[in-house]
Length: 98
Length: 292
Image (cartoon, rainbow over all chains, first blue to last red; front, side, top):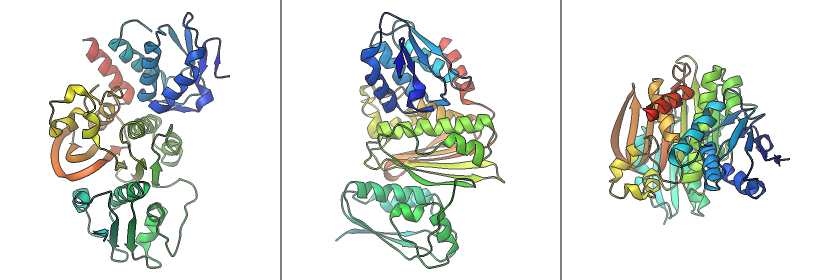
């Protein structure tokens, strides 16, 4: 299941999260199933690599859809800095806080 | 009558010389390429991804490209070229075909990174870690760099054929040479998509492309910044060619230059095995810089 209890399980899309196109595709696939009133959980279990391109595209799309409450789950120490950096950069360009 | 160019593989062509040969070519018109070499003389490998990109971009746009290439038997240089996937990429049959089994060794064969793809065609992290035996931090950061660059090519090149990647390891000198080449629209054209740059000259736009959060607007402007900064801070080298201009990083310094026109992007990177500044550290530095 790609989304459950307002959680996105990225392992359903492979071990590497790379391209802006992929990020856009995932967001478009799931956006209508997201509960805007609850915290969105981004689950990175099993993910080995993420690019800044993928993450900034994702966070920009989430902000654009007024989804401003997000938590990061099960991101290993190799990918968490990239995720945090992307989140902070997108937040610095828009109002609101993830 | 097709356009005709002659390429001598054995003259240690500087990239600039190869660019000059193709700078006058109309990529919408049929082309005949005479590839020359003296048997068993050394071939400069940087020619391969550039030739593959130009030829296959034209073919992907249904332009006829005829390649005349003498391929004698038992030629060590051509066997090596075949191992690198060069001949196959150009659609040339070799009399003594050689197929590698597995990626272990000192190079990653020339491969096409398709346009509009979601991921790199091979698992670079695994190759850099297990086959190239790089340290964990270096393997991870190098894989990340290539994935960011590949993402750039899928988003910005508008290339029919994508880009070409090639990697050569030099274990004694302890560095990698990595090439990523496309024959798309080029960086200048992409940067002009950002209205903020309407008053910038072409010469000004290429250096802007590697500055933090200076991009086309169709992205965040992080990829080329962190790639170039990673190379610069780790004592590596970089040559970025697009249009009539180029950027070079050498010994920690950035310089700009002029060249004959290359339509797409040629990126050559020389990256040491031993990384002293990681991507995470660069990002932390940037966070503190922006807080201040």
